[in-house]
Image (tube, rainbow, N blue to C red; front, side):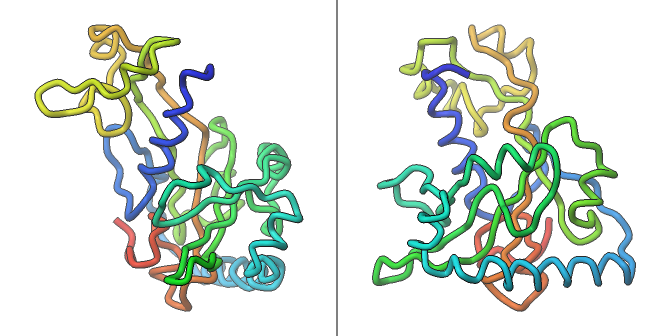
Amino acid sequence: MDSSDAPVAVAAHEAMGGAMAADSHMRLTPRRRGSAADSSRAARLVSEMRRDLGKYRDVRVAEADGYRQFLPGRKQPVYHFTNWRWAIEAMFHFDAAKPTSLLYREDANGHFELVGAMYTAPARTTDADLDARIPLSVARWHEHVNWCLPPRGARQRWGEQRDGHPVFGPASPIATRAACDSVGGRFKPRLLGWMVHVQAFASDDPAVIWSVGHHPGAAGRP
């Protein structure tokens, strides 16, 4: 992506603002039957996160360790503080103590409250490998798919609408290469790779901790 695609990151971020469900622009890993071993592994991960990431309740400690706020100055239900070094390492292996992003909510006084973390994996990662990172019976990884983007250098076209719907991005009804070609766009079958949110600090309720979305009020998994 070039500099004209900065809105892509914004749109992808905002598409994750609440509970997420599979649709033409969002792919979720398949449900799997759970096991005692899966539950034990998931509980151990949450325990490790609380032990190793608890220091980041103070956002200043996160910033000192290389986490930088995504979209600073933009009001968001959940704020991502991303460490690009750990994002690169996540392409090769999983480390619960080194999430790609830390997730924060802003309280009434404007203070950041740690609610969880986002882990990532390359688009090429198989379901079996994702399951090895975090059991698929507990968590459902997601990826952004089938996006139609404006032509390169045509950032102004992001605001286009047809029949009351956006032409480009995750809210567009366009989800095929042919339909995207017909509006002069660029079709991306996949963006950014796999992601999963674990809200280990938001609640003790597993339905919240493992919610597909990262909004703490969005309990349950679609």
